[in-house]
Length: 358
View 1 (tube, one colour):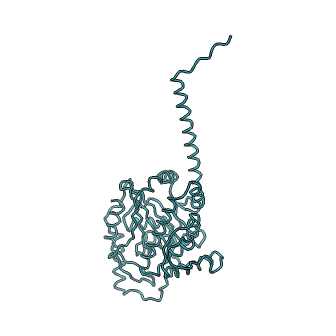
View 2 (tube, helix red, strand yellow; view 1 turned 45 degrees about the vertical axis):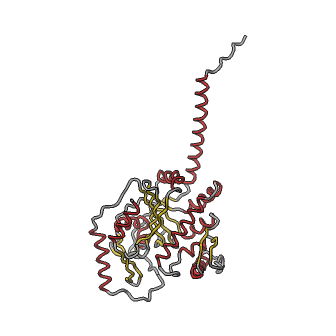
């Protein structure tokens, strides 16, 4: 005769339930880790270094016929730049609760070699103030570039020595610790916005005209018909990636030169960020699979995990966008046939430290 089966005690049932729940949670965590790892593994790790080159192609700003500034003004500018670089006693700013990432947009047409950086935005995630500070660094700022030991426009640093040299240049001239960089080229920028379904921008007729000139250039480089994807009218509208790029590269309409361009770039970045926040899980998956393989970065795997896991929190942070130099802290000049910005380093450094670190 079979012995009657013993009933499980309440304690045993509780332990089994806890074990099942823990097992399910572990499975969910494992699946989440594998998904996250799948995304992160798509990113191109690049230390951002390259052999220092002695010379780089000239950057035509469309104003090469303009005469240089007076020699005495240029000598004064060179002296101030050199003094800031060699004699600045301000310690390198650092805070464990602030993570600084340099976003670099470049027109990379030379395979295997970094070109000048057309866009430089220092994105600072401040966990104490719950702010994301986006600092646009104007490409024409005249600085001392380490390693080559001579002055040039800030955007030349990437062409001379890759992102690593750009980060060192920013650190040495502005006394701000730059932790990492992320870079995309212009054609990747187009694909990412197209994957988002475009972004909404309001354009003037002058901005439409200049953007279309850039679209003609993009079409030539990508073997598309000359008039493919042109903007047709001003006003508020949903634009494609190619149209958004034409808008973001504009430094000619509306006045302001490079100041106007960096403002447009920040507008595009904010519009992209807003669009990402409204994406479904399926749309985000497609976006990640489009975006991540086009990114180059020296972020370590652990840092990437931390940033991705922190995204739900960061989307609630206040965004503070601004540009260096500020009003009243610069002077337009021409040096060796190029338009440059001679800046008040003391004012700019003080404002950067105040905004980024609170």
